[in-house]
Image 1: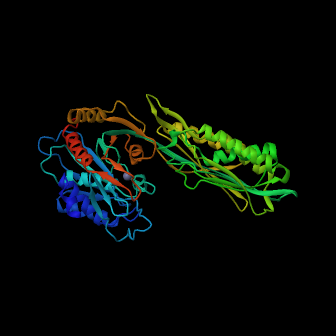
Image 2: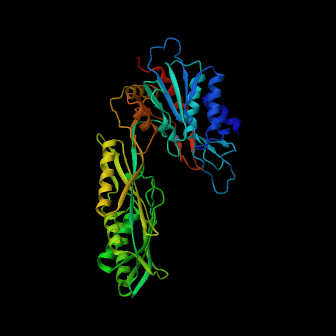
Image 3: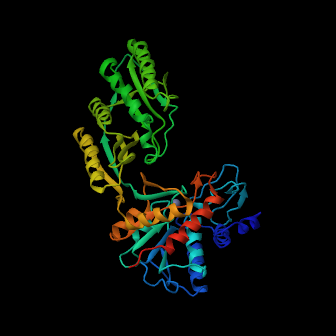
Length: 486
Ligand SMILES: [Zn+2]
């Protein structure tokens, strides 16, 4: 079975990828694959170095006659996301990935394949050993730990790479060129609350929002999908304004980089308001279904009797919480000028959770323009501070602002056109790429991100399209031949 993979073309790339599959390399456990690439350099007489976090740089001199070309950095990440199906027995620390050919695709048996970014790494290594190619000076930069925090790219120091142009090989749609990415920052709000005694004559209920699609808080933020926390909050607002609703607890969302699909609150209502509020809930459910028509209309809001509660979040805090969640911006805020279908700046109200006298709210702002990200993060901060919350920030990383006049973009468009008879799509991704961090340290690097077609990355259904790898390789080789002179 694995023999088939090494027979695929280009054979050098695929046989290196096959070797990579045999080496365990989940994020934060890259030592074996670092050794593999370092030994590879030594075996082929190439200069290599490693920094203190494990990022590797391997240099290959220009081929004869190409010495005047600008230096190109080929960049990919060494780690992969370790995901497996429930029924699959696999130890990512020890077991090889079982890659196999299935029609037009290469897949893995029950686990992530690691084509993200193993194909990019294999392509770079194939460039290093293929003596039939024509290219200027090449440096291969292999970073660690992209998938769980980009700590490798974060640690890159000035002077580690020397190139003029950087080709990031970590994109997932062949025929697309990425020229920008979003940076991000977390904004976290905290309310302290007192537990108060529930007044007499109240009944307890669980109010729940579910059935939403959710999705990635960057890539899917422009789809207009429902945010379960925002929807739940509309119900709480109405309940407080008109039905004397009290809140015992609230919980919604799970991951900061996911649009929240579900949210629920344990509430109490005066017994006489039960029926009227239930009717109102149904009415709002219909309104929201209508608003989310064709986008997210499986939304389901329910109210059901709950075990009696005895305490509630103090009224002052509960009201401030609901008002601030209402006022908090959410979704796409601005599109990239000149690329109106691409989100420039967005925010996701991701998680809310009350527990032991404390309410935590987690949000994530993204933008390809660093100042716009800061502006939006202040906006979110201001709303929660107005409501008396404490606000802090974590996890900031820079974006990569698109440069439509980039010289390497012009070259790569021309090469693609000549080779495949069509124009590649030029895009900006509304999520983080290592290019944002690298561009921050090397502001003069002219960067592009591209790659073969990979579907369902980060899941056991990950697969890479075989033909697209062939085209990606030819495109990479021809791009290197056509790099501008110094
Ligand atoms: Zn990747």
